[in-house]
Image (tube, rainbow, N blue to C red):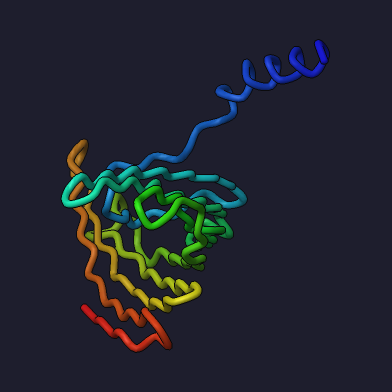
Length: 168
């Protein structure tokens, strides 16, 4: 048992030195450059939501994304599982939500070209959800200032028999 603890401490001591992600300047906005070729990144997201009116409810959402740079202009991301833990008057437990595939292809560079552009496509599917999303990503770097814009087209089918439809 002592050797197991020593191994765990050793792994934890050295893991921060190799555990760093790529540069990301914006939280909810994609940028034109893609991941470096053969780079692999794992992103884990956790979001907690508490509702107190009229009844108390807690929900913790989890998302696990594996991102891979295929070439200097193409990246693939797989959202392995979106799932959540819910604790409320109706019950407590874990629920799988959906998984997704995301593709980004870089057309032009925001530093070398007049404007950097990329195209983005995502398909998300789950038990009661299908979502198709596409984006045109535009970016211009002006020294330390980064201007970015995402034009998005999205269609969502959800609910029983995917009867609820939404688009934007």
